[in-house]
Length: 128
Image 1 (cartoon, rainbow, N blue to C red):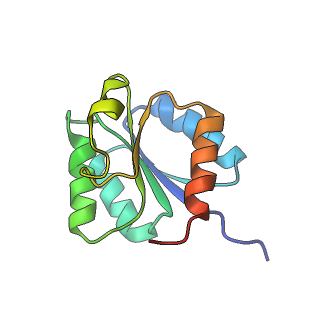
Image 2: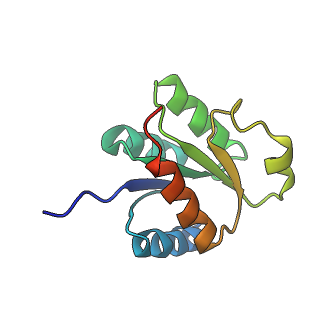
């Protein structure tokens, strides 16, 4: 019997990013759960309880990503969430990830080695 693959939920409305990230995650031994809207992401997070979540900052609305995080945290979820943004490195430098309920902020596109290294390190940590 094979061990369960860690499940990563990726919420993004950009099909190209979803497909590229799926290739990276699956090649790294992860299962990727996919949602194209914050609403779909919330439903999937509740249903499947992923080990970690990646969410785009801007989807159907400019602040969809932050609204998604707020709703998930308000529902009591403590799953690590990393926000991805293509608006520039300034977000990662100026935003307080912890105050936003995030484990971190990553600049899109995230390279393969960085993403897999982050997942390996984060998922190796015991639950907080």
